[in-house]
Image (cartoon, rainbow, N blue to C red; front, top):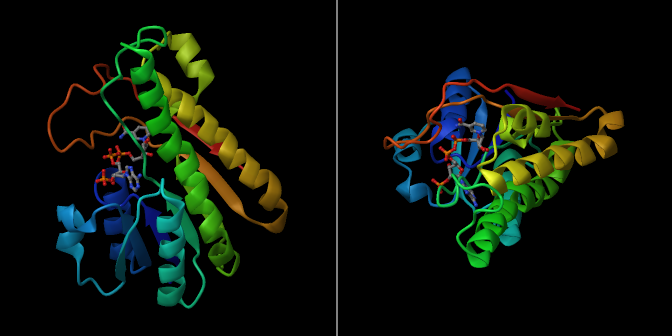
Length: 219
Ligand SMILES: NC(=O)c1ccc[n+]([C@@H]2O[C@H](COP(=O)([O-])OP(=O)(O)OC[C@H]3O[C@@H](n4cnc5c(N)ncnc54)[C@H](OP(=O)(O)O)[C@@H]3O)[C@@H](O)[C@H]2O)c1
């Protein structure tokens, strides 16, 4: 049975990956920042094929420790890495690029988005590459967003979610850079947008429109 590492597995789409893969009988390594606070993971604790690890993807030392722990669990290989974790800060979501309340707010928003949504994915992918190289499938699935697509923002005049959109756009290039290096060796790097999925545990005015976004980069 294939083995999957899911980074950002505490809730939302990441937790759903965990549930559905376990139901198929696959081996799942679920990485979460604070597993003890994840009611979803705590409910699944004890499942035969589930291994829960603590890790913040924006901390390279955490991701190295997760890769080492995974190697001990699986014997050194992993078949699929799913980069699901993302920073979705809401504090500057509704302002346009020239409407941040201060330079500090702009810096904060871009730093948080960059550290998790771009660098965090690189930290995670890099440390798991040696394990993936020993796996049978050599697949990396990265959750991007339709908001990272410049054509979408331009055509719809969507001028908010600034730092998140910029980071997800950069993430598309990150995916392409891995593919440029590894696709000739039979690896697959796939960046997808799941569309608009209501993953908020509490009601929140998140996306006040009903558009369904599709975006896919296959490399
Ligand atoms: N939902 C949508 O409509 C939508 C649309 C387009 C793209 N996406 C993308 O799909 C993915 C999942 O979205 P979602 O709606 O399920 O998000 P979500 O409900 O907000 O969950 C985000 C997940 O990422 C984790 N996370 C955040 N920062 C982390 C870090 N530094 N280290 C480790 N884990 C971290 C969170 O853990 P904590 O519990 O510790 O915070 C949580 O498990 C994201 O990449 C998102 O950008 C979602």
